[in-house]
Length: 640
Image (cartoon, rainbow, N blue to C red):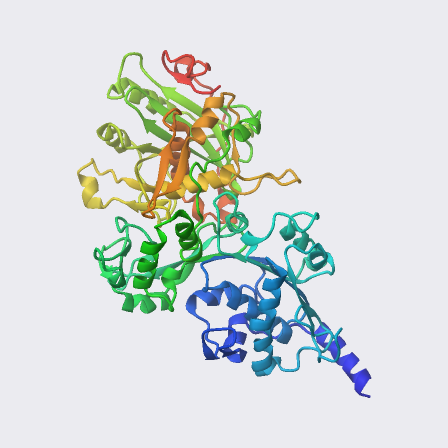
């Protein structure tokens, strides 16, 4: 009777839904640490920043893929090991764990997974017994005792290990350290992902790694498709929530007295109070993840060791002072401690590739998928340069037009130039649908002739709120901006009401240029999939002049030996196209695009008024269509 009963029991278990318990709750109740594979002993306790990444792996969560871009010793291995225990006990199925090398896979199995199954009471007896050399329970292949699934460990270089079985649970560890190809079979991540095709309805895929080189990092590419959840913690002084960053303290960050890194404190980006290390645990306990790309269905999480309970800020500061002595050690510090990408000197997209992929849509007309129209304005001594850009779902965008407003022999202090801008802002732009669309927001850089910008902005609607407020509803809103070296936020801050009173009640929006340029370069590097769809963030251009594309890629991100990030322009190339791309992105942010839901997009796509297309009144407004570089004799459209 025993054998038939076991067979029926397995069949019954397969039909039953998994227990209603989250991964973190299961781990807190069942996982026992022995110290053999971890620095800790005793009952597992999920830390605040680990709970959400674990719980999205639960059967009740709808996601099929999770991205962890993490510093070392923070998230990756603990979550993977706990999830393996959860699979065996709660929701069995065929499972594949891929490490960079076979040696890494064997070490994970022996040092972390085997102790978990030996010492956690709920997992005892879950694996088939070891009976012979070719047993179902080896270091690299473990079969569950009731036959309901297995755990296979392999190295990314092994094509047979990646392609041998259908897989429901796929755990890809340290993907930035995978080889370019598994033997001669191709990308190991793609090979492994193909194994999950039979479980499309209930699969779970974890992609995790410390990041490596900007533009070459697999985890960066995965992170960009995710909803990009950053861990925000409150300031104990003013309760302002922020991401902990390692910077020079100008806009918040880790600070310490000269020669005393052990006394490092954290400078709040808002109140500028110095927070001692002993309050870090208070901050982390009250922290929360906030999605920076909420439209994505893929949960993505990033954490640095600045929130680690095991490492003091003083220890990290001292480690940085040692690491900055060489490029290689500084690179390792950024990757493994701060979970940041390393940008090689000269890192910029290839302008020639952008030029070759240019499209042939009609300029001056909003494409069918464009639902939000914005503009950016760069002020120079003798001209205003303007880009008009349309955004659609997923922040896909189209450059609709590029203008140079210039009055012969006049400076931009001349009222005539600003009247040209007024006329351009007043235009309702024709759409492919046959409707028209106004510019919702126009951002103008205040770095040159700020008083002229303030006066122009004061004649138009202003955003009523800061960056966390409701999106603007009045068309032709004008927003003065100023760049600031922030690499963790697009809108760093908005000037106070008191400061605005000195500028005709105009508030300045401070743009995090490091953040904006990095995001833009990431978008320019997007490779189109074979199915011909356009991924989120894809940038469409139709200009024919090569200098425009050179201008988009005119700056390189470098990291000084001090750890300071800088964007260095190529002085032989005009960088206005890049500056205007940043300004247009900020205008879209002012409109609330980073918080748009599907309902918001549906409302926006249906709110364009039906009207006759308002063509330009005359050539004086639109100017000639000559290349600006060859004809600088007045108002004109650039790069046509």
